[in-house]
Amino acid sequence: MSPQKMIFSKVAEERLQGHATRKNLYEKIKKHFDNKEIVSFFTSFYYPVMLEDTDANILEGILRKTDLTKGLLLIISSPGGDGLAAERIINLCRSYSASNKYEVIVPGKAKSAATMVCLGANTIHMSKTSELGPVDPMLIITENGKKEHFSVFNLIKGYENLFQRAVRERNNIQPYLQQLNNYDERHINEMRMELAASKDITIKALKGGMLDNFDERQIERKVKIFLTPEKVKTHGRPIYMKDAAGCGLNIHEIDLMDQSWNLIYELYFRLNEYVSRNMIGKCIESRIDTFSSKYVEG
Image 1 (tube, rainbow, N blue to C red):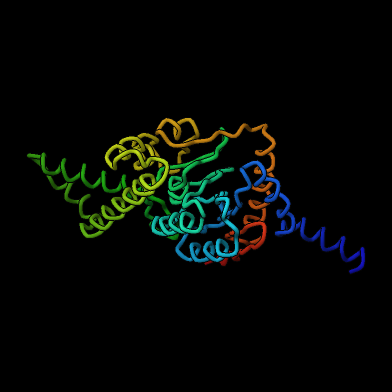
Image 2: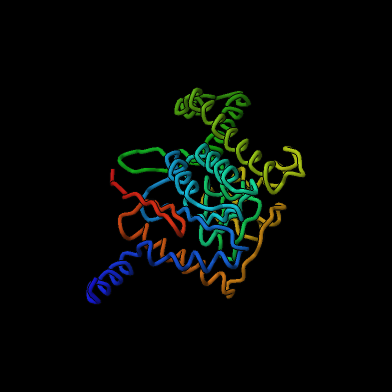
């Protein structure tokens, strides 16, 4: 290859933030974490893509090609998605790691189902700017061509409060009945099951990992901030390192000025640019192999 072509290829890689621009970062980061093998799991915050079941299949393909004899360190950035997919990912990470344990790094935001994946780890590495979030499921409703996101927990609570007020009403019950007509009991029961499943996945993930010394009731009390939006008030509100550590989770703080965080942040920036600026919805990769999927609108 001529020098001109080599330079062109290098510039093209840099512009598109291809895999070659990140390989050396994986090598450098792993030296700061006892040579555990690094795998990145990124889904875009820019395009409306979610963590889903097929992602677990892709992740398994990467894990099968990765030497995990010294352990697995998953770098995760995602707005969340399917809780059942998160449960599969937790099982995959534990199963392929030689220690049956894994660790995670949250360089930016790991929300909802991505938080579940973090809670299944034995250590969560965070800085003061890293964000986790509540794991209660969300319902997306399209009205007049506009998508609205609703907390399943809040929808159920709203229905139950309305129903109780109707039962207590001794005079004019009609306004309550009119509002209750907007609800379908079958949908409410389905949402109750989804909420229960989310809680069950989270508690079992913690019981099998960093909170294995506690029973399930104790775990539920400790991590209530994650299970419902009652304390944080809204599903999207961040849960920062201090509050996560206050739940008894095994949180390892990385100083923002630490050399390891400089490397992590560079990798995060490059991957975030890659998935968000090149019509790429998702990227799952190691230093050896990479898989990315194009975002297809609609």
